[in-house]
Image (spheres, rainbow, N blue to C red):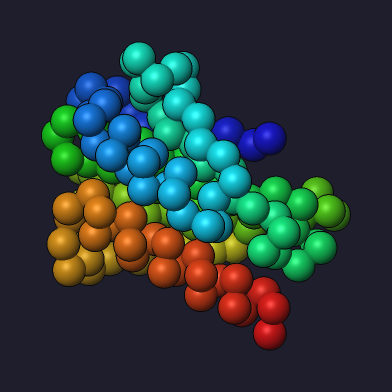
Length: 147
Protein backbone atom coordinates (compact mmCIF):
# COMPACT_ATOMS: atom_id res chain seq x y z
CA UNK A 1 0.00 0.00 0.00
CA UNK A 2 1.48 3.32 -1.10
CA UNK A 3 1.91 5.95 1.60
CA UNK A 4 0.92 9.61 1.12
CA UNK A 5 3.69 11.77 -0.32
CA UNK A 6 6.10 13.24 2.19
CA UNK A 7 4.80 16.78 1.56
CA UNK A 8 1.21 15.89 2.52
CA UNK A 9 1.68 16.44 6.25
CA UNK A 10 4.75 18.42 7.20
CA UNK A 11 5.22 18.94 10.93
CA UNK A 12 4.98 22.70 10.38
CA UNK A 13 1.21 22.35 9.97
CA UNK A 14 0.87 21.98 13.74
CA UNK A 15 -0.42 19.24 15.99
CA UNK A 16 -3.24 16.96 14.84
CA UNK A 17 -6.77 18.16 15.59
CA UNK A 18 -7.99 15.01 17.31
CA UNK A 19 -11.51 16.34 17.87
CA UNK A 20 -11.96 17.04 14.15
CA UNK A 21 -10.45 13.69 13.16
CA UNK A 22 -12.91 11.92 15.48
CA UNK A 23 -15.81 13.98 14.07
CA UNK A 24 -14.85 13.03 10.52
CA UNK A 25 -14.41 9.40 11.55
CA UNK A 26 -17.99 9.28 12.89
CA UNK A 27 -19.30 10.62 9.57
CA UNK A 28 -17.14 8.35 7.45
CA UNK A 29 -18.04 5.29 9.54
CA UNK A 30 -21.73 5.91 8.86
CA UNK A 31 -21.30 6.48 5.10
CA UNK A 32 -22.37 3.56 2.88
CA UNK A 33 -19.28 4.03 0.70
CA UNK A 34 -16.94 3.34 3.62
CA UNK A 35 -16.10 -0.23 4.63
CA UNK A 36 -13.79 0.52 7.55
CA UNK A 37 -12.11 3.39 9.38
CA UNK A 38 -8.94 3.35 11.45
CA UNK A 39 -6.75 5.86 13.24
CA UNK A 40 -2.98 5.88 13.01
CA UNK A 41 -1.31 5.30 15.37
CA UNK A 42 -4.48 4.72 17.45
CA UNK A 43 -7.75 6.34 18.54
CA UNK A 44 -6.16 7.87 21.66
CA UNK A 45 -3.48 9.82 19.78
CA UNK A 46 -4.69 9.96 16.16
CA UNK A 47 -2.47 11.65 13.60
CA UNK A 48 -4.11 10.15 10.53
CA UNK A 49 -7.61 8.92 9.80
CA UNK A 50 -7.75 6.24 7.14
CA UNK A 51 -11.04 5.19 5.54
CA UNK A 52 -11.04 2.04 3.43
CA UNK A 53 -13.80 2.31 0.82
CA UNK A 54 -16.14 -0.50 -0.21
CA UNK A 55 -14.68 -1.98 -3.40
CA UNK A 56 -18.04 -3.63 -4.14
CA UNK A 57 -19.10 -0.17 -5.33
CA UNK A 58 -16.24 -0.05 -7.86
CA UNK A 59 -15.62 -1.87 -11.14
CA UNK A 60 -13.45 -4.99 -10.81
CA UNK A 61 -10.37 -3.17 -12.09
CA UNK A 62 -10.21 -1.20 -8.81
CA UNK A 63 -8.84 -3.52 -6.14
CA UNK A 64 -8.73 -1.02 -3.26
CA UNK A 65 -9.71 2.57 -2.54
CA UNK A 66 -9.16 4.73 0.50
CA UNK A 67 -9.07 8.21 1.98
CA UNK A 68 -6.19 9.39 4.15
CA UNK A 69 -7.29 12.38 6.24
CA UNK A 70 -5.02 14.68 8.21
CA UNK A 71 -6.45 17.68 10.08
CA UNK A 72 -4.46 20.06 12.23
CA UNK A 73 -5.29 22.46 15.07
CA UNK A 74 -4.20 25.29 12.76
CA UNK A 75 -7.13 24.44 10.45
CA UNK A 76 -4.75 23.05 7.83
CA UNK A 77 -5.72 19.75 6.28
CA UNK A 78 -4.85 17.17 3.67
CA UNK A 79 -7.35 14.65 2.27
CA UNK A 80 -5.78 12.14 -0.07
CA UNK A 81 -7.94 9.81 -2.21
CA UNK A 82 -6.20 6.73 -3.62
CA UNK A 83 -7.45 3.98 -5.93
CA UNK A 84 -5.34 0.89 -6.48
CA UNK A 85 -5.84 -1.15 -9.64
CA UNK A 86 -5.27 -4.79 -10.50
CA UNK A 87 -2.49 -3.82 -12.93
CA UNK A 88 -0.52 -2.25 -10.07
CA UNK A 89 -1.46 1.27 -11.14
CA UNK A 90 -2.79 3.99 -8.87
CA UNK A 91 -5.17 6.86 -9.45
CA UNK A 92 -5.08 9.55 -6.81
CA UNK A 93 -5.85 13.15 -5.98
CA UNK A 94 -5.63 15.37 -2.91
CA UNK A 95 -7.40 18.35 -1.37
CA UNK A 96 -5.07 20.53 0.73
CA UNK A 97 -5.16 23.66 2.84
CA UNK A 98 -1.73 24.61 4.15
CA UNK A 99 0.99 27.18 3.62
CA UNK A 100 3.16 26.36 0.63
CA UNK A 101 5.31 27.84 -2.09
CA UNK A 102 3.61 26.17 -5.06
CA UNK A 103 0.00 27.43 -5.03
CA UNK A 104 -2.57 29.22 -2.95
CA UNK A 105 -3.16 27.91 0.54
CA UNK A 106 -6.22 25.99 -0.69
CA UNK A 107 -5.32 23.79 -3.63
CA UNK A 108 -6.07 20.51 -5.35
CA UNK A 109 -3.60 17.88 -6.54
CA UNK A 110 -5.12 16.70 -9.83
CA UNK A 111 -5.70 13.06 -10.74
CA UNK A 112 -4.48 10.66 -11.91
CA UNK A 113 -1.10 11.15 -10.16
CA UNK A 114 -1.75 14.07 -7.76
CA UNK A 115 1.34 15.82 -9.10
CA UNK A 116 -0.35 18.63 -11.09
CA UNK A 117 -1.74 21.40 -8.87
CA UNK A 118 -4.60 23.83 -9.27
CA UNK A 119 -5.93 26.53 -6.98
CA UNK A 120 -9.13 25.49 -5.27
CA UNK A 121 -12.10 27.46 -4.05
CA UNK A 122 -14.20 25.88 -1.34
CA UNK A 123 -17.43 27.48 -0.14
CA UNK A 124 -16.42 26.74 3.45
CA UNK A 125 -13.43 25.31 5.28
CA UNK A 126 -15.58 23.77 8.01
CA UNK A 127 -14.55 20.10 8.29
CA UNK A 128 -18.03 18.77 7.47
CA UNK A 129 -18.29 21.01 4.41
CA UNK A 130 -14.89 19.85 3.17
CA UNK A 131 -15.95 16.26 3.89
CA UNK A 132 -19.10 16.77 1.79
CA UNK A 133 -17.09 18.24 -1.08
CA UNK A 134 -14.67 15.30 -1.08
CA UNK A 135 -17.37 12.64 -0.84
CA UNK A 136 -19.32 14.28 -3.68
CA UNK A 137 -16.16 14.18 -5.82
CA UNK A 138 -15.68 10.48 -5.02
CA UNK A 139 -19.31 9.74 -5.95
CA UNK A 140 -18.71 11.58 -9.25
CA UNK A 141 -15.57 9.51 -9.77
CA UNK A 142 -17.60 6.33 -9.25
CA UNK A 143 -20.11 7.46 -11.87
CA UNK A 144 -17.25 8.13 -14.28
CA UNK A 145 -15.72 4.71 -13.64
CA UNK A 146 -19.02 2.95 -14.39
CA UNK A 147 -19.81 4.98 -17.55
